[in-house]
Image (cartoon, rainbow, N blue to C red):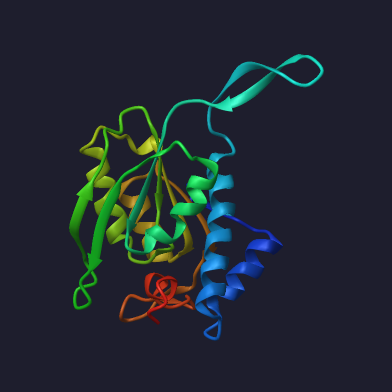
Length: 210
């Protein structure tokens, strides 16, 4: 349906997603499930990343091994994106981290940037992380900010737990080469631009505020 959308289909991810959706899930279980889904997303995002061959020694002999090649930058969209940061750093402990703060105007549903701190992004692999892709406004504004720091769309992957069709369409319209990786393509946005069936406010739930 969407040329650059990857939806992860496996039983473990579906089980964890059910925990996130359940309104009776505790804050600790919500954090656990979100973190583990973050791990699954990162594995999918990095599975075809460039590698280089190096020589190592086992306990028995010298052999060749592979290591990831190049630099990676992780960009959490504040605040909710922080919930997926530890999962990324588990696999990429030496990655750089840039930050974008995007706040949604509840009346217009438009993204408003309130914070930006980014390294130079030229020739680096970039992972944007945000649990929910709704209208796509925050993601579009974030990508435009990254392009100002020498990124190219081909370097960027957007990782999210849930994606609304409206948000995916908006991103494909603006950035046809952007790769989006998600656990679930949702049904729709409601009149308030919240995802259905969704899971609620991921940032508040992760912070224990909802």
